[in-house]
Image 1 (tube, helix red, strand yellow):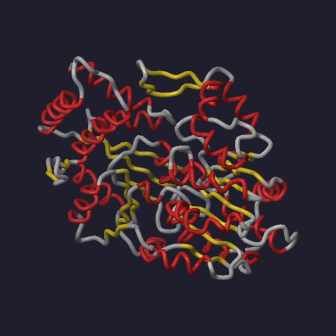
Image 2: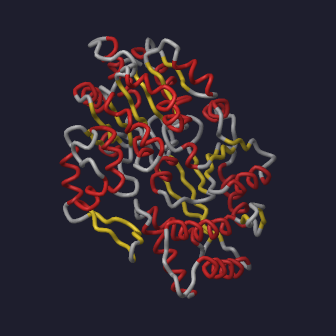
Image 3: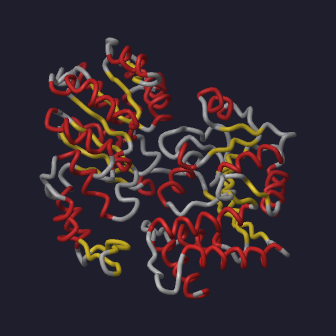
Length: 458
């Protein structure tokens, strides 16, 4: 394939990057953000000579695989030399001294890069920076964000890539856009941004969430529209059919144990005198209940205690119905991973955590590929290995849920994608599925679930 094979919307993205020194591609999953960006880089380096060195900041797996693989896939990109700034500190430093066009580093090492090689930015060694998965820089309090902010004035070109610009609502946009335009459009300070466009919801000094004011979304969209290009997958892609299944599991005698466990957890975390729900207390309660739903829980010393095998038995049914077809399975807790591997030891159950296992999956050599959604969320192309997804352990994060499903439900998938959700009846599983179905981008569903339990027991 070469540049002439790009879709019209991808060519539009290429022109947008070239025309705007500071830009963001807010493109849905599967629309080809990587190839569009690489094509623009190739033009800027080899045709207009505006750029010589590009730094790409990406999630670790994407940094390891996606950018180099995309160059190999497209004829017009094969001349671009990529240096992977990964591994030990020594290897990273060696990679930075290697002659290349593009230097790819994982986002966890941005602070290290700025602290130890800040002179590269000050001397304009990198005349273009690409932030692959801009939404991972949504917190202005994070070390990686502060590090990049410090060198932002020295960057001639910045491109932000994300398919989900505001996974937890528009409140997250300020930090992301600041790295693009240094506050020109949404302001220099997050406090002013919040005061202008949001109403705070909380009790006393504790803020539960920020809700958009009327018309604020349109105003924000208008402010950033000149440097952002946004496209939805349904407007441009002919994606394979998606079939969702919700397999309900009767816990039987363990339902009574779940109810008691739920009550004990609420009484442990909250009191009648203080029913204040914080993000931490809500997550703590939810995690405990989610573990029980899956069949095992951690104690205070992080030892695993098995309670039931109901979900594993339900998973057996899905595996049997798959009739040998590969399954991509997502879990929520580490003990779920080990229990699933042990339970299906007669099958090829493999953790999807290395380049070798990813290749094996895409070749159809794995029966069950098991992964946490956070580890495969962005950029990995897994659609050639299978078309069945099973959610053993669910997540409240709509972003993780959508990104994980998009590993198979994307361009290049030749079969309908079947997504199975294993749901223990009468447990918090049901509320998570409801929140995901409603496309709740905030943590409102989680807060409501916790509040209902406090009202029930206190």
